[in-house]
Length: 168
Image (cartoon, rainbow, N blue to C red; front, side, top):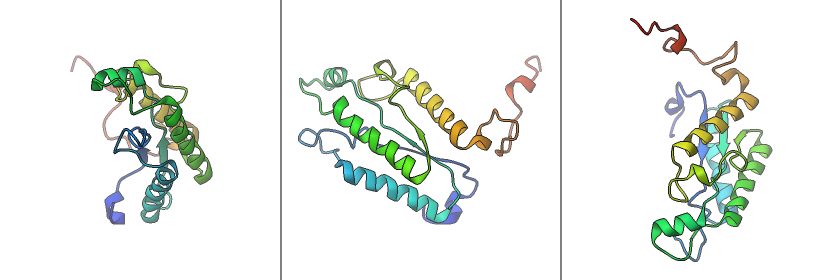
């Protein structure tokens, strides 16, 4: 996003970072120190808000890894991801969302190991859990953006599925 025009028509931003950032530094080049991660995430929000001050933003906590499955997937005996380290990144996201008054899709309670295909990346179950968590965060924090609300502020482009004649 380099100008306000880049956000034309955008009604919501979702930022979902941290699964790679929370890797163990001695075992992965993807690691970003916790304080730097939180500062980077805040900079992303402030950057977006610099162009669109009222833009609703949802922060999503990184998913907890399954270190055993991730090690097996990578063919190693030691995982470069741990639940304990990733929890710190999750907590940083929750604190940042709270401090900035943003919605937070908190995966700490809505996603478990069954939502991961290889111990790190989401599978269909995980994607559904994230989508549901984001939708719940929208409903709580930005209720007029919830497509199920009576006075939804998002214009409807196509008819609802139940308004379509399946025989036609």
